Length: 448
Image (cartoon, rainbow, N blue to C red; front, side, top):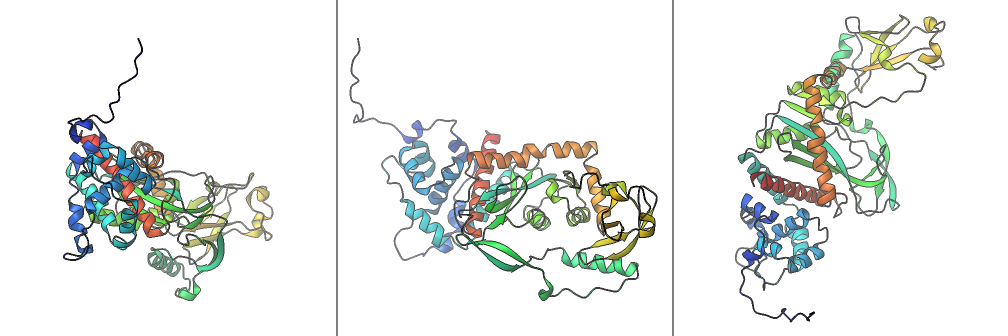
């Protein structure tokens, strides 16, 4: 016999909020992992001590943001609607069933006004990393670094073209010293010092909506305005130890060494090895890794060459003579070292003119083969040899299980495909909170 259900929506029930939240819920594990009360002490100086209306508890505010990042809720209005009906969210925030949920504008205005220019997001991230270190979840022996793109909140059609000065690299002083030393050894005159007026000028595309984003044009990547999240992950439990945001026009290798030093100094890390993508395979990075005594393993990218042409590896470098030897036995002699750190070598056109491999070697009008070699190429070759060793292969294989998986989880589960806000500083806050939440989840699950 089929009966209509009796109305039960208005019955009085005696329950506690704690009973309604499953014991194995993720938020329970996170709440047991970290005491968030430190946030209140870190932002106390941003509030008036004896005047004004009672403020929303900053611990509740940031824990609400954590919920949004943990469960991939990008909209703050939608986040408040979810907190309204989700008892687990209420329990995590310390709200009773009858308590009023804060308005979305309260959170957004605090984020825009009160916390703008503060380091609270960085401090939260650092505190979570320190918590992971106390629980021995950070080994600090091997660090993996890579970058991923976040689509800027900007239409790629709305842009202007502006002339800009090409950004200078952090290692220019060391490079200039190496170039001058190399030129002196070869009896060359010193180069004129660099000046601000001699910096290269470039025409770049600037978004009229978000001018701080960068117009990305890369092989296999979408085209448009993006930001890059440069992330470093520890090799033990894939705890994120650093996240750094730049416009998409900044190459991966540019901030790497400075960010590596910053996190090692901040957390007292003493790595012995690093694993990097092929995009980091530059002479400056290899030189920097050797100076720091690190066993670097960097991926390989097949160089582009014209079909039918001899590759550069077909020419043998003779270190003791500082010359190159071509496949036909001719010697390419040193000519000069340019400002960018490249030594130039050239062949004798009289010999090349009668060479049977001339058409596969060069198409220059003067029938001269030219090669270049960086002053730090020795370090580059030594680092490149690491990827072929058993230790290097094992170290690099772990990269896809750490930093690549970290980015995959961030994009799939934590809304990391798109920049929620406009401006470099706000996107940086997004990446810091997303990384902190990923670390919280890993700590909670590992300790559980």
